[in-house]
Length: 133
Image (cartoon, rainbow, N blue to C red; front, side):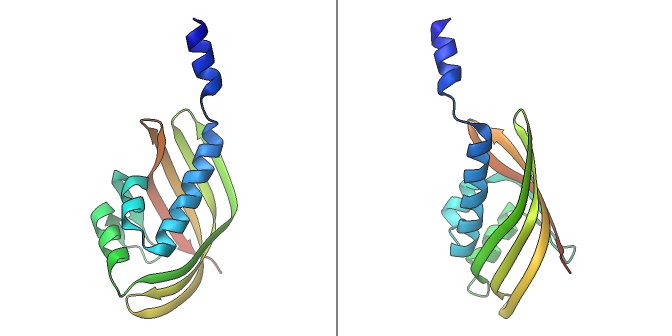
């Protein structure tokens, strides 16, 4: 019993873990770090872009690995998170600057991310973005 209590006390804070995963995600996108993104994205992740395009993990990783897409900066703010067990909803605003499909991009988006905690780590399960005015 004491081992169980100690184990619960030593478990990291899920909110801090989620915040770290979210920041790692932004950094991985801005660096086109495909290896980090592969670990952060759920195998069945679904992205709905601000243009209405729906993309799976394979498509997102291919886009970010392409020389036609490079993000100089990805900066999130106004972030709010709600965690219930192994599920979390994150909303916020992200400012993106760089090149997408070979064209310069500088935009602000609102987003909703769904995170799932599996095997002790958070993975992005869904993301929906819309252009902010």
